[in-house]
Length: 131
Image (cartoon, rainbow, N blue to C red; front, side):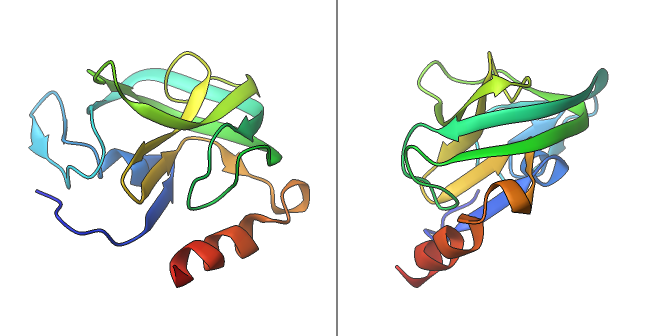
């Protein structure tokens, strides 16, 4: 089980290994994020456009970005109280147009943020690391 308070961020599949497991086969994962990752059932290829709806390790409430999604997985069995830091205006995200699954200082994002559209990323991330 994941027991530290360190800051962790990741896009796409790196978000999956922080979940609890990947069925079928039920492989144990880090467990830093809620839910289970289902591989190979869904294919998402899309542009994304979104905004942060709360302060996170990679963005602050009101920051916006343009990016893309490309993945063959979905995160399932999320608790009703799962926290998301991003709402997408375009794209699928993790659940119902929400992305940036959060737990403590950990955030997992399906959207790959294009650096030219979101220049605040580096500053936000370094600031979060320095806290």
